[in-house]
Length: 268
Image (cartoon, rainbow, N blue to C red; front, top):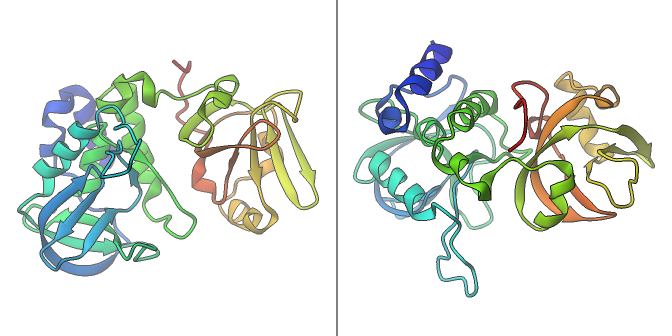
């Protein structure tokens, strides 16, 4: 059923994406019902209880929201408008699949329209108005979300039509320090050093793009059936914040950050 919905969306395009019947995936914990009375940006809204909800699993284009010197990301206003169309003034059911609040006391919830059952996160991803954004303490229904993101990216919907959000190649990553990116390429070698695992994407680990997996995170990868040493020579896509440490680096704390299937034939 889920794959048929994806095919339907691919064929009809973005205009009707929000109207498609995206059921909330199974396995989430119910968390009550409230009305959305305000939308802050493309992934944050306000309930009539006074609480803010950060739509867990998503990163929509960012607005300044009073931050001095912060430039709005491309399509940020469009992402906010998309969430308004889906949720504003509607009664929503809240559902949880991991940590339930963040350090700002916002609720970290999956949302569904209380009347139609439309999964808000799914609709936003299908429209290309957000990227999948995962955390080690909030990993539920990520496979379903990644599948929706891939379909939107293949159809170049929403943000996926803009170069700002293009999937990077490893040799481009040094231009994107301190930003969240998707980077796709072939792992040159896998090295273990003092309990840390490094996926090196070039011959010079001192300057080339690298993915780091700390020893404490390795068990989660094993439990997911992802053997890191077997990734040498494989093409993968990794998502996360790009930092500078002997060249550009993304730390992978959980296996959902690394994709080995559904990769693009070429990164644009």
